[in-house]
Length: 79
Image (cartoon, rainbow, N blue to C red; front, top):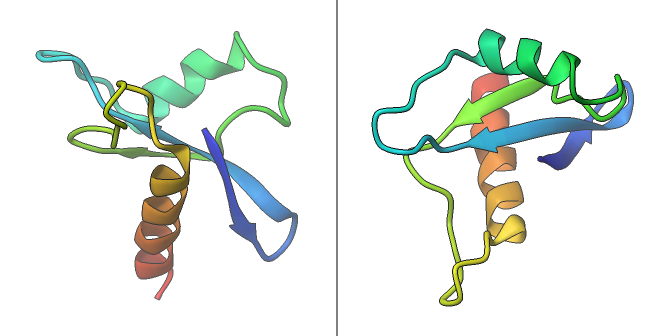
């Protein structure tokens, strides 16, 4: 989950998700799952499903790349 710019709140939580092979879920199902696990301010307001998450050579998720990708995706859908 990363913060992306939001006109009203300054920033909002968006989750980027990539499934294991054979895994599926809808955005609504994932948000509903988060309701039982996270406080309201921590829950993602939207979820972007990606084919895979960018990772470093050591296998860590590259959050900065994810954040930049989400900002591009969300800016494209707003216009």
